[in-house]
Length: 77
Image (cartoon, rainbow, N blue to C red):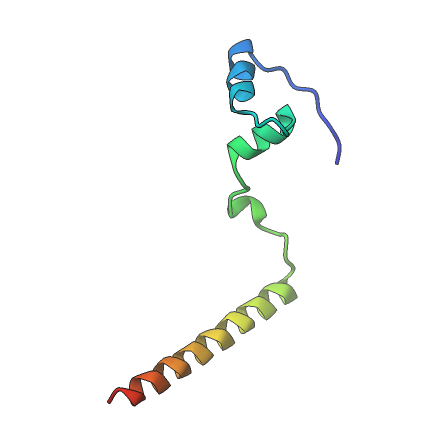
């Protein structure tokens, strides 16, 4: 991973520094404070085959869950 130099206004730097944990760098603190990537930013990480496989896995799990719910419901009739 590369690095970039950035300029922060003094007040911004002080705010980040105030929220920085003892074991963090300023960069790590900024990363934590701005949060994780949005779903939009994650677009394109998986190829079409991976997406299809994930969808199939989710659909299979949903079907299994529905069957289990039906079995439990039948026991209470």
